[in-house]
Length: 243
Image (cartoon, rainbow, N blue to C red):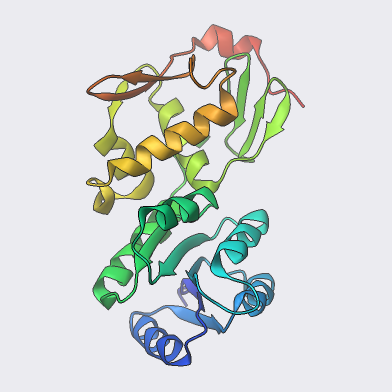
């Protein structure tokens, strides 16, 4: 039998849990529910879901802290649900490692589309993994283990940060538009959300560049997009993954 994608639905509103669970099960998903952050973490450890739908405002442990803890132990996709539409909430969720966020009240078709987009991009491995290891002297990326090191020191990247870095390296030397990055890292549904790209380019630069204000790896091509500086095969061969 084909394995169903599993979704952990976390919301303190029992009516919302019941309705959304019913919708998702009709779409063929296996749904696990939790009423608060603490229960969600227990279910995360026990069930290992493919995706977590996480309400922000909850008792005991709110969605922000729950998202942070999820990201410490899991690469599952995370969609945040919030009753507030402020951009600061969206940025906060992305900074904590969420893949997407949706404002309440929402229409189920929109939630379903976002679920499918997040599952698709977390499921599909980057073609760059075929190269196994990339190195340009300062930056080393092991695509099989998803390990990133800068000057020999490990650097923690969120799943979205890693996907973006892998896509940039795969296309090193090429100028990539924001829409190309959005389509390949987030999915075609997000091509009109350029803010995501700018935010995650900043995150990556802060983690891999010696001076983020004067980047040497991820360059901005003004009015067009971004380009990862091309590294020759000879240079890569001279710089094995440092451990």
